[in-house]
Image 1 (cartoon, one colour):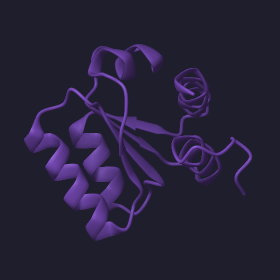
Image 2 (cartoon, rainbow, N blue to C red):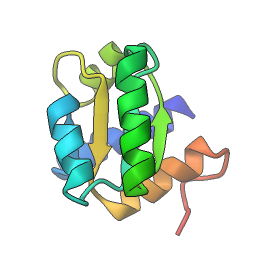
Image 3 (cartoon, rainbow, N blue to C red):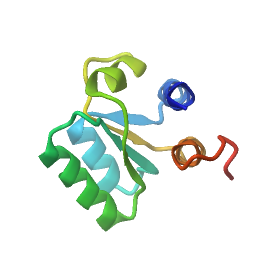
Image 4 (tube, one colour):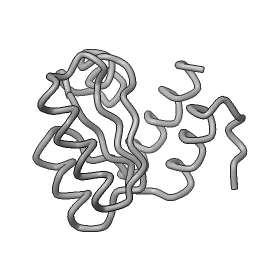
Length: 106
């Protein structure tokens, strides 16, 4: 499961559909572009709460997933505590996997 999700995150990054880091992720949510937000499981409680509340308010799916180090590595950057997926297709596929389904959610 984790490898499939990392694969989709990597593809979304190559397609230019990822915003990473707290400032960029928050801007993506508030700008209405975020289709899915992932926050590292080892992010601070305040960070998790901030994005959870923001995503609830803006009706964006939100999950905690991976570590800051893993999220940074998969997109080829330093540690990142949050990512925003700005593509509907990638977002739906990752959500499908997170919910125990397959990657072919439409």
